[in-house]
Length: 383
Ligand SMILES: *Cc1c(COP(=O)(O)O)cnc(C)c1O
Image 1 (spheres, helix red, strand yellow):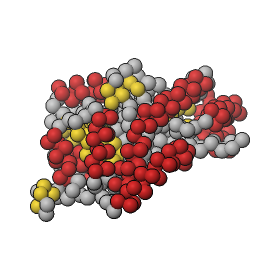
Image 2 (image 1 turned 90 degrees about the vertical axis):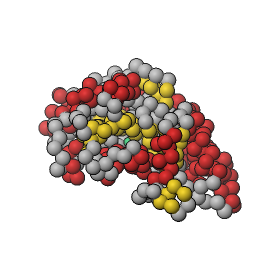
Image 3 (image 1 turned 90 degrees about the horizontal axis):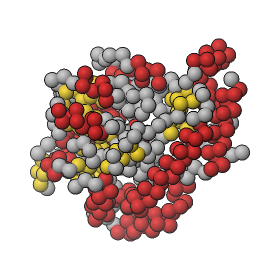
Image 4 (image 1 turned 180 degrees about the horizontal axis):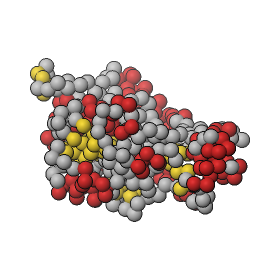
């Protein structure tokens, strides 16, 4: 038995090694390392893939979110409604532009923000909604957009974990005013370093983002805004150009793996497998289960003074199976947000102690996946 890592990026490189090496060498020989036709072409290809009229590349998913908020003038005094169950970058940028994140609780089935609670959180200061398609699972964008239109709110989608995911046969990142993507290596479309992009159908927003990502410069050495420097490197764009045509097949492999997990895990009573909403096409950046059993929770506590989830995770570790906890502490409970008045969010506050993300990447082999499933079953039987 070999170890099963939670993620192994080397296997994908092995599959496309020659194409990547050739393309990177072309960039090295070209002498053009910033911008150029490779970056321009990648933006066009990515816009076409998401099915929007504009894509603007940048240096990271974090920058994409920051630039999105800046481009629609969100700042001090504004409230942005979002989820507490996400990577910190989502709300860090809301605070960085001087606005206030308003956290609402999550839907335990999808781990995404609970749309039922959206309207109650809207105030006269609310300027935008920032949904996150967490773990690759699309938010119900039909309901969300209907509420946004009714209250005239901007929608910025955090698609960092969901490149290629669809809601009603339409790609996420094409519903809201702006979609924000990350090409961090572990994302579904990952570069070999940092990278990000924004998608929009609004030409004015695209132009504003282009200005802000280039020091707020409108004409050469003529500055209209305080911007930042945020570029997708030419080498990263070249790598992404090679990888983009494979994305759908890689996402399908993730979906096949998720089906197998689901089949074998749904029979275990203490495990709640993740599920898609009707209308959603999840791309499984993470496959996240919940360990949920009052009885076993009590046993784990009395025998090992541990939560059921932490105990299972340790057992998997002993059996050579990697796993991860996304996310151990919801953002409304982070020290940095101590001063924010917030309501209690009971669902996320419980779920963060129950979630466990199992190994998931397109190249995960069948024997490895079987090992994960056996190890999980074994662990629970030992309790
Ligand atoms: C990865 C991630 C980001 C940030 O992307 P970077 O490219 O790492 O800056 C933002 N939001 C979510 C949900 C993410 O998973």
